[in-house]
Length: 230
Ligand code: HEM
Image (cartoon, rainbow, N blue to C red; front, side, top):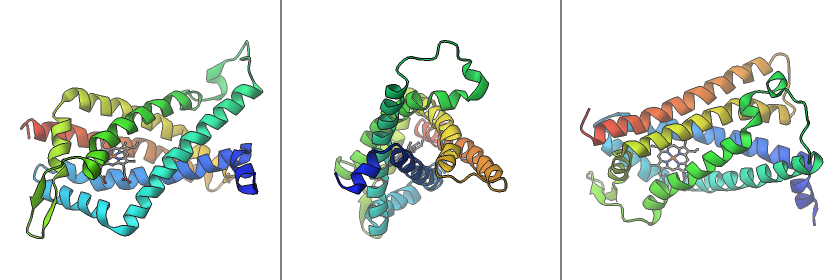
């Protein structure tokens, strides 16, 4: 084992990689949410398809995409490692604990929230990312060559109200996960300071509420557009 693997599997290494990948994935979520807001426009098919085409063909974004996938995998591996480490060090639960006294609901349920999010990501990638890369998405031409019409696939998926509901549940889990995770990542990195911690706290709340809210508007709008309501 060289020093990199030793560090990676140490408790400090696990915490650091979880924090760094968690913050990177938070940034990904902000960009992904903002970019997809074009779905709110009932006449936004062309803008969405051109955006999706750019995101899947522009080389620096393709590199960032590989980084995102690697970040998700590393985050999960380290989460499992930390959970196993904690269970080993405290195999028997304390008999008299008042869970609400010192910790938030989100902080005590990060594991289950993470499992819900993982379940969501697998279904989400299968529906859109896999379809865009390897599926049979129809082509459309807006005058500068054929590109994939992912907008039609997205609307077809969100036409189903159960699919929309599933997204809203997953976004609730993402909100709670971020509510604890964002601030916790800064603490693990040692970024605790009387001046900056309140700013991190406000930023954490803004991301944990604003990002899932912005995302939630998208399947709702797509549902309304796909069913001819707007
Ligand atoms: C709720 C509204 C959302 C919509 C409408 C949406 C839509 C899409 C679409 C159309 C793609 C495929 C485009 C492409 O291949 O570049 C995609 C990719 C992806 N989405 Fe979402 N998404 C949503 C929320 C989320 C959330 C909440 C997460 C994470 C928790 C997420 C994670 C991803 C990932 C990791 C990819 C692959 C990106 C890459 O290739 O780098 N998405 N999404």
